[in-house]
Length: 77
Image 1 (spheres, rainbow, N blue to C red):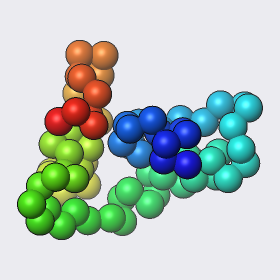
Image 2: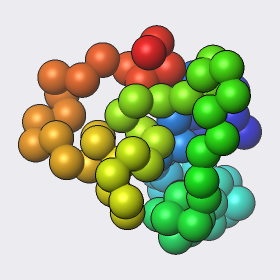
Image 3: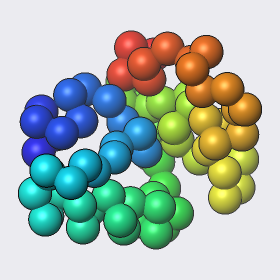
């Protein structure tokens, strides 16, 4: 599912279309609830995302930026 639907992007950016599988639609519908209950263990930082991980309690930086078109793909950070 990661390779097919996310194509290297972060789950925070995931969306579902009418033609996607029911499982993927279900995952996308619950992603905000799931992400709000997840924490990040940084370790060596290789899987850490400056924009998509929670740094401000309860918020992701990407959600606070008004124009996300100016942000490069988060998987390259």
